[in-house]
Amino acid sequence: MSSKQVEPLVKLRDAYAMASEALNEYIATLAPPEAKEEKAHEWTWNPQKIPWVKAEGARGAYERYPAQDQKPEATLDYQNLLQTLKEHTKNFLFRDGWNYWLFPDLVTVGRKKKK
Image (cartoon, rainbow, N blue to C red; front, side):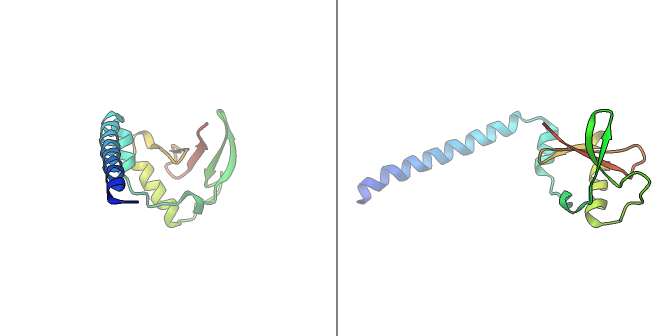
């Protein structure tokens, strides 16, 4: 391909890139404040490293940690999740398709996959 053929393609690519950036900036202004806050938050816990236990509640099946009548292990991921939940409004947050919440005892964490 000659430079005469490539030049219009490069300009078109650059124009689309600029349009894409502008759209992303505009879309970010439309998000509710809590969504922006979570997006900016760096997660210090990995939910895959927490030994979740299946449970049944008034609203159906969910997972919890620790299990009832079990003392929680002080793993770093669990402790960081606990701290993150305590920092969020109503001890509740949404991450990667899961709802996480803190029970009234302030030690038990529940999670449920959002449908």
